[in-house]
Image (cartoon, rainbow, N blue to C red; front, side, top):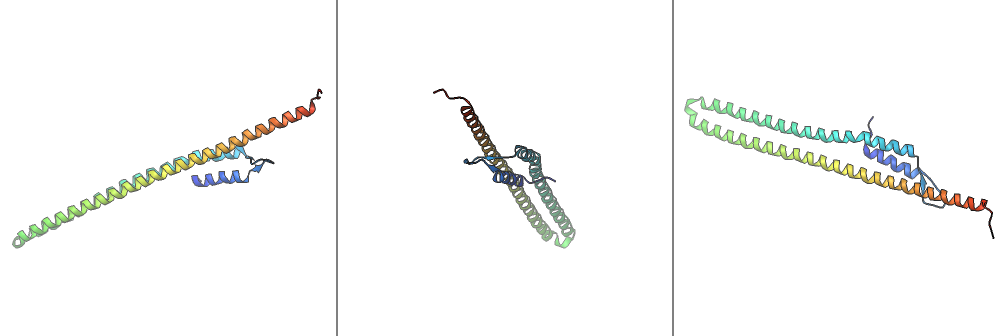
Length: 177
């Protein structure tokens, strides 16, 4: 089951919050394997977020296709109505005027429907792109923060080990006074 990127980032935060602290420092020791597992899970789940953007694009195309089909249906109905009206000889002029008006209204309504569908589809795509950009930035920021914290902890641990080693060596070595 694919996890949401936000859930994985929360688990990474929780791993840092629950990590054991080193005495007399603000450094923490984390489970490197667990952190690597979270990073691998993030990599695995990125395609799911990209698939959502593709699905949104397909949804846009479907909306436009539906709008075009509706517009075409409206125009066809208007043409049928125009043919029906013009077939009656005593009302030919009036029918032609009505047919022209119906056609104009149908074309206008079809254009408005297509324009509205295009605007909505573009907004959906822009929202998806914005969301994808936000997710990528949040992921990069959180990953950078986590890796920086891990680097700082490891650096501090190395320094602590080196100081302890030096202290042990100085205690073990005879002093020449």
